[in-house]
Image (cartoon, rainbow, N blue to C red; front, top):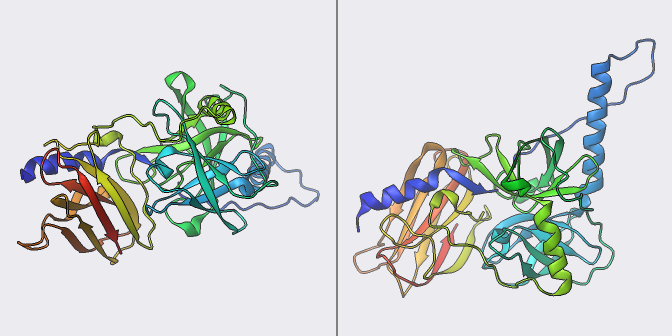
Length: 367
């Protein structure tokens, strides 16, 4: 195989749009009455803090954590008392139904995958079983987002223990005729599918991805506008929404959605097929990401009796391949990597076929 060509293809994964951060602890205090009149700036700051606290307390009970059998995790939010949850398509695409849900109060439940948005729009819906009185989020009016307005994000960045992390920022720009909202509230891998809220606690967007060259948040977050969500909900209600994801082919690795793997490890069953994303030599690849710690030892295996697989462990922050393997031994065409991670951060696993056009099932294990 042309390793130089493959490396060139892999390097395209090191920058670009990565499905999605960070967390922020917000403290507040009450001003006690005394003879000193607070300045206008102090009063304004206190009002902003109170708005943030109010938004979080109102909205956070309706935000959930989603786990799938493919080892990925993401966020979502409840939009009806009977448990309809909105998330990103890439969070649940390819997963078996039902998925696992963890509510804000710690309750665990099963949810059936019920719909995907058409035309490759990165939206999906799951329905929590046997519910009729769940807290839910109201939706803002279509096209209500304005550049400069305050926005708030709730989700689960990087690890399950950070569930319902709260961050805030402003709308920086409106893209694609208002179809995509650019903002600077911190989001990272795992925030995908979480709500972007206005100061009333209404949903104005669905956090979907970040633009980064480091693998983590650098100040440019992107959310699908509510203008996409409202017709999707109508289609679900009328029974017209597809039940299979209809995402467009993405041959450019810089634009690929990268599933987030659970840091506790994962076993993933997948299949290379015609239409999958390709590297520079036209071989198919799949990409996954996980959050690692400095000194952590990881073992990644790719097993198949149908294809000759390749594995790459990439550290986007340093823009380099940490390890790679295409054959465990001369008589074993499966791939295996053992590596010690150099520092804390997001890592990417790339599974790849040896020959252009190879198709077939494989199992990926990380521990």
